[in-house]
Length: 120
Image (spheres, rainbow, N blue to C red):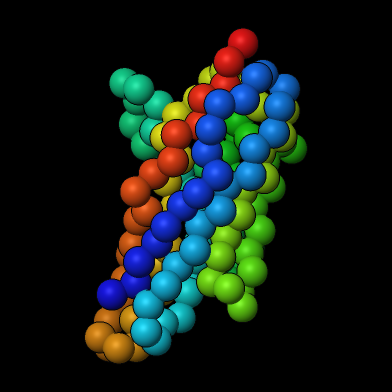
């Protein structure tokens, strides 16, 4: 089973920066895509950014402020968040999809979430 663990959330003032990290671990697997979603109180979970074999995509609300990057050797994805706004406050979840060779099946794993709070 492929497990995903996030880190790096916290409290920051508006205009500040944070970097989230997410590491995938397991026995034998291939990663096809790694991404970040977020869910604010009372709102649906939304895609923030994703990096896949087909490229990188961002939500319009974070374009130019957030950058997603991957370290394939470490099976890790990062989300650099700059110029943070109060509306970026949410629980951020890492999502990793790929193939688990130990189970001969695909996987779609989520982290436990990390809180990001931006004060005005």
